[in-house]
Each structure stands twice: as C-alpha cells, then as structure tokens.
Length: 259
Image 1: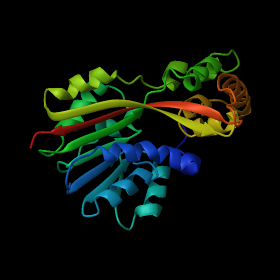
Image 2: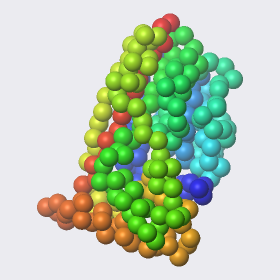
Image 3: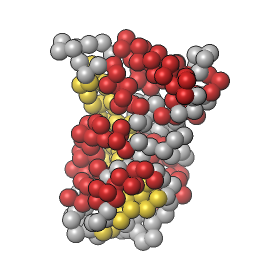
C-alpha cells in the first residue's frame, strides 16, 4: 500500500480532530510527565496533547514517513517524533499517558495488544483509545461489494483490504477491568454533513479506501472510484439542504492503572 497522503487526510481536519478532542477530554490524569501519541499521523492529535499538557514530554509515533514529515513541520521544534510500527512498539520508559486516536484499528491481535499497552504504563497511567467502528456501515460495505466485481477482484484481496474487525465494546472492558483502577468505554455515532457523494469518497480516499484502490492498476483506479461513488450516492440520500449525512461510529476506551 502506498504511503499516506497528509494533505488529503487533513482536508477534513476539523471532523477528524473532533473525536480526538473528545477522547482527550475524558482523560483525568492531573499532569502526566511522559505522553505518547501512538499513531500520531500528521500531528493534529499531538497538538491537542501539547496544548492540554504543556509541561509534558510528548512523543509522536507513526509508521508513515509522510505523516511524520507533516507532523515535524507542524510541531517538530517542540516535540519528538519517531517512526515505528505499533504492533511491536515498546516505550523506552513507562509513559503516564498512551493516547491512540484512530490508529489501533489498523493493528491486529487486540487481545494481546491492548493488555500489553496497558501494562506498559507507569502506575496511575492512562490508556486512551479511539477507533472507527464502521466496518458494517454502507460506506465500508460498499467498498467490499465493488472490490468483488469481476474487473477488480483479481487485483484486490478484499478480506485483507477490509482490515481487521475490532473487538466488541464488552471485550475491551473485560481485557482491562481486572487490572485497572477504572475503565470507561463508550460509542459515539457522528453524523457528518457532507456536500455530496464525492465528498464522502474524498473523506474515505485517504483512509479506508486506500487498501482497495492502491493495489489496482492505474487504469482501473478511476473506474473503481466512479462505481463506488455511484453506489455511495444511492446509499446516502440528500437531506433537506442537499447535503449527505455520513454516519461514522467510533469506539472509545479510557482505562487507568492503579497508582
């Protein structure tokens, strides 16, 4: 898969940053000294952490060179960034806060990952996670349907492209509750007003659509997006003002270790 496109990702920066801000608002730690933004992307979430905890040492971690370049341009004079894969990342010293906004859904084996990250925290530390939970929404179901069409199927492993299903909300609670001082889990379904079907596709082009479109020969990429856009237009009807509402469920987890 090609590297991430920070400019395309940030085209909807306000909508993408809203859940990051709402996750951070539920973190009750009074003053973490060591903070990690795991899957920091272009630094929009890292900037929130800097503003909330100005005295903390903050490290942004991401596996995308392009995203890290954008983050460094944005915040590099103030914060540290490192390229690493979340699946095998481990902190050099125990953080007081591990914050992962819209990142862990790309990593498998959550039964091991979530307890491992929680165990890496300092006493009293907080694990704060937000993940899209939209695999069964029309936006993502239609990706799989178009990928199964005869002209595209030979080029796309639809099961791989669809990503990994995250666990259920009760599963995450159970993974953490026995060892945590407190665990808070919740769902929010955002309703994003989008100008038209093409805007919805542009939103998803920088994230969920990448594993479907990137493996295609260039000649077929436009055809895939055209068919997908047509189906999105049918699935998301125009509202009273002509815009479309993109439903976007997200799952949140905030867990604190005992002091």
